[in-house]
Image (cartoon, rainbow, N blue to C red; front, top):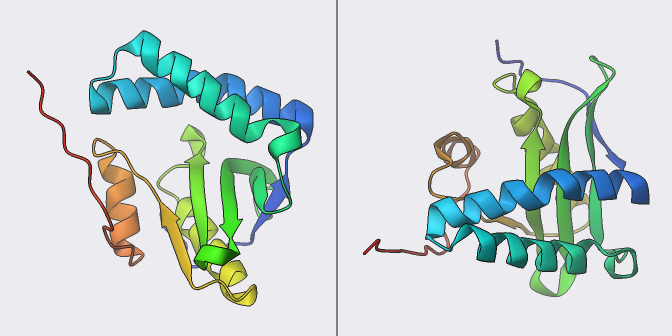
Length: 160
């Protein structure tokens, strides 16, 4: 059952929590890259490790980069994760990853988190939100379309 309102807030992760997130994210991201683009699994895993260790290294987590839990006050629980980068010079917030835990999917938490993000961006004077979505993730594509996101670019591949 969808709810039209829920109290969502973002709770920043500490270094140990970021490390646990990377243990989950690296193989998950590599699998998505491999299955959606045809990149061999070993190469995708190597690239994912390199990219995520660079982006999420403590010294690279700047004040404009945020990674935290999506917390629902009603459930008193972390229902997911959001990771984004504020790019004021581009007038946008780029969402690297939004993830809702399996037990909390199809309950409106992703919509609530993205709406919360929109409100925060407007408050900061940011005019755009941007993200990438894999073609095979039809549920996410449907969500983004329903929330008014438009396709800005597409990558096409052909399996030989």
